[in-house]
Length: 528
Image (cartoon, rainbow, N blue to C red; front, side):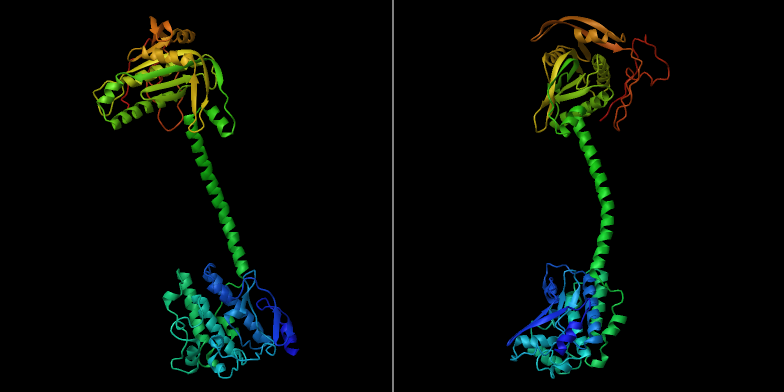
């Protein structure tokens, strides 16, 4: 009862709380505080638990604090082993199995391998006096046991790990008690510590040095737990959970900046994706699709459609390699793409050498669509006049251009790789205007000519009636040039605007009047 009273009075953060005992001879059960993480031995042997050196030094700190408390009040422990060091849910190590030795005295002593295994933690001077492990106890004996536990923490292995593969537990205990010179003690190689970085190697070296002092042969040469606490474990983590919370707080702060950085990167990628989508579909249509809305087909009362293709493209392809053809189209259509960026137009598609552009949809612009397409067509023809084919510099590239105005229906077709398509007789007529045109000339329909007449700046020549397949005879015209004095604003994007004198009359230093019939300036060579 006196032992139980002493055990009940033990109260420390690093000792398990003694609750009581169930005595039903010959079975005796001691009830203590429950520690859900198990014993130190269990944690060290569990390879799934990552133990950094901050964690290990925290465990060492807890053992020292618990033993300092027990030695200051209850006395020697006598059974300090890794299996008696329990870890609670907050990863705080608590010393257990102290106190009532009378209840824990075995009735039958069996000296089997388990008996000698428990003696591996017992100081050599106590082995001979021990009827069973823990029967004899001393303060210096507990320090010896602590040294063996340090070996386990450093290696994450059992006691005397270097010898257990070749010797039995009984042989190890016999050699420890034989008072050899030098004394028989655990051996730890640097490669076995798994210390890793420099900080881990320093911590492992410090713990092994402390272990060597603790398992000294003479008890008086071993430091007390108060000395260890004062001189050897300074700077060790005294509370793992506080340290973890501090590290989590630091991680959270770092995470905030990381999240901001990733959010900015995500926003940038989103903008890039949107801009890429805007290159494939008209901006209003793309915005509807991104919002999850269904893009309904829409009818437009009047738009202007532009078609162009390369004259003699079949013969040119026959005399070129496929790579050369691809490079040619890429150079030419990249030039066209930069030009149309200055106008209120939408590039519908390119099929082979055919280039299709429309103005007046999906956002209506009154009658401006005819003017925009005609100005763009003049710029394209001027660009082609100075275009140089990379693999055939002497070849003079020519295009036919056809323009027609009229009603169309437009809508998004397809789910995968959706395409904004135009339907109606206006599209077919514009295509026929191109196919019946002439090289480096812009073929206009009567409807388009009537629309651009209101500006009075376009010079048009009557061609006469032309037979169009599927449409019969139609009155058509040639668009010659434009005396438009207005300079175009810069197109979006990093590409510089093409320097075409017809469309950019402000580039020359002299003024240009509305009556200037045509400004003849040598166009620049547009390379790839």
